[in-house]
Image 1 (cartoon, one colour):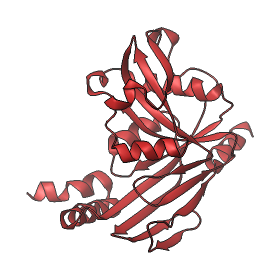
Image 2: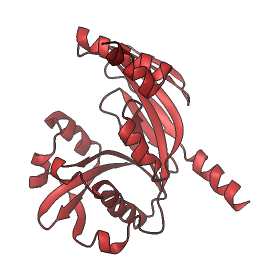
Image 3: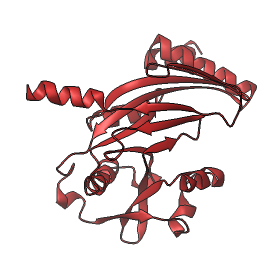
Length: 238
């Protein structure tokens, strides 16, 4: 019992572990009482494949549009799926033959988060996207599935002139954070959201830093910029 109680602190550290424990306690009270801790990340779109061509030659990458049979296989609630298409999100699917093995979603210019009332504004507008919900079906999670989807996504975005992709990672998802770190992701900020029914409080390390919302129709706008990667590139070139 003691090991179970202390495991979040060992895995996430004392600060994030405390937030994790609070969120678990809140969720027992109500589904409308939650605490979210996001790491906001940026990754460069590379000019070379992430994997050798021989490792992905059996895969085909193509856009999955509204009404495609693959949509029905995705573990996404109907109202969330409707919200994605409403805001112009694009889904890139990875196929092995005719079988959909995984997918990833992108938004251009802005991304409306569906867990909290936050809209991420992407800059530079014509060179950045927001990626979310990278998913591999369970029977394909062994091997290079994650890297294979990112290889296809990297080429897909590069061909459209995209240079950066942003994402938000849940601080408590350790496996996802480790996988993304290998792809060259860099942190651009952190944000904590406290939800209590209609009440929502955001505390972040980037502007607007602190925002309180008492209406469900009110969304905070957070601008994301790839300053970390640009600074790193200048240092490397210097």
